[in-house]
Length: 265
Ligand SMILES: Nc1ncnc2c1ncn2[C@@H]1O[C@H](COP(=O)(O)OP(=O)(O)OP(=O)(O)O)[C@@H](O)[C@H]1O
View (cartoon, helix red, strand yellow):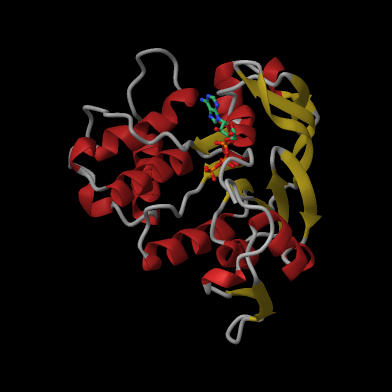
């Protein structure tokens, strides 16, 4: 299933923070949203998983406006890892992941064998199978995040919307998660701060700057030094990754190399 975002504008208390965004997440592809802090990535993702309503424009799931779908129907198609991960569930890890099966159940129905199997598989996918009986509130930030990812995986949706899924994860879990997303081949819309991870895992990128989409395309076409300077305010060379051939952004970390507009500069 594909997602088309058409002319999307979103405002918080009357302040427009996303203005006329057009973007596509093609079926079975990984589409990345990248951009500086506050550029509107989470806001767009929140609109796709229906946490926010557009001020203008629409989000189409395979041609149907998502606002026309019932909450249960859209939850059977779109699973999300929201940026807000603070929920203090008084539940075990297994119970949190089992919440992903709710859209498939009638009221008060229990888990059946297929549900339990999907929950176990999702926990194994994120490397949390050994922690399934622990209380969610006792987990570290990275462990909580992996549990919420497992909840989204257990939801078995065609579309995954992931807000900074690698945030908090150690290097091995970052690599494993990105490999898992590549392996799933679901329609995935993901925000990432790590541009090298985005270059390696995403089929297509949309670059946001001050609430507008300023570039879209394959990572190697989009992540070029002038854009990195203009949008992110950094000086960088883009070279070929010696192991994978993917674009590799080599930042110049010297203070005097910072270019472009910075807040308060
Ligand atoms: N709940 C909110 N109420 C008011 N303004 C908000 C709210 N959430 C975000 N904003 C504002 O909307 C703008 C876009 O924020 P958003 O979280 O979408 O950016 P982002 O690109 O995801 O940033 P980051 O990389 O820091 O996560 C920012 O100016 C932010 O301050």
